[in-house]
Image (cartoon, rainbow, N blue to C red; front, side, top):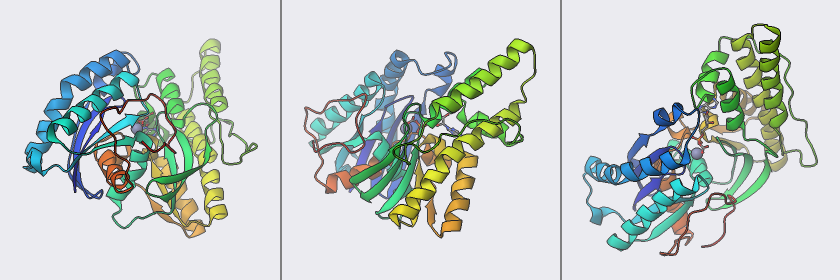
Length: 338
Ligand code: KG4
Ligand code: ZN
């Protein structure tokens, strides 16, 4: 089954064609990151406008690259939530028009389910059940994937997402948007014991976590140094910060592996590209004898192929939409039958 899948929830416009949820025939992407960099973050109106400009060309490019015709496409999939509402709407309206014109099923996909499904592309043998650490710009959670479309959230951040904190600290340190990857690079040169930053302690739900205290501590440290004229050891701060984020995430993942007895752990989302988190997850999994699934960096960030992968399983589960499909800025990953 060839699914043409569309992603436009933030600052990447993407159209992919994926076969049977596992094989990427093409993954076309137009990044707007350089445009938003000037403003230090995503400007929603600019994002929507750029999605409109890019989306038709990307769909044509996807067909041209695969030498498929419109008739060879069996269904249209699209990210319908969550994201910047104007941006998500562009993808949803394009997908609805394409499904209507081609008379093909329309498959709505939750963006975070897509991130998780990036693992199916990277690891054709991976099947549920497994655990997934989801760490993106807007979401941080530990999820039990019971089946392709059936999930249980073990814990989430109670405040900021890990990616938001990486970006905020990087921005204050003068790194260009989105700063997570740049901070990660600089951290490699630093001493992670240089600054003592807080790790959130387990609360009522031991899987839940918090990052706002860590973010505030790092920002206060930078501002205080500025005020008293001290120089911040930037690599040291980046390394200490990355270690604190990882020390918040990884022990909870370890607990999840131990308590559920699931011996398969996947990572998903843009922050899953972080070298410190990847290293710590690998080490923890080796200790516990668990299998690790880490998509290549190209599949960690937003892309269309991950939406096409999840869409196949949503389709098999009967989760198709009609022309009343709407876009949503927020929606639980648990979703509901449409
Ligand atoms: O999943 P994603 O592409 O978009 C959302 O769905 O939010 O994630 C983007 C986030 C940004 O916050 C970006 O700074 C972060 O992923 N990121 C990283 C790294 N690469 C990307 N954060 C830390 N270390 C990295 N290497
Ligand atoms: Zn994303």
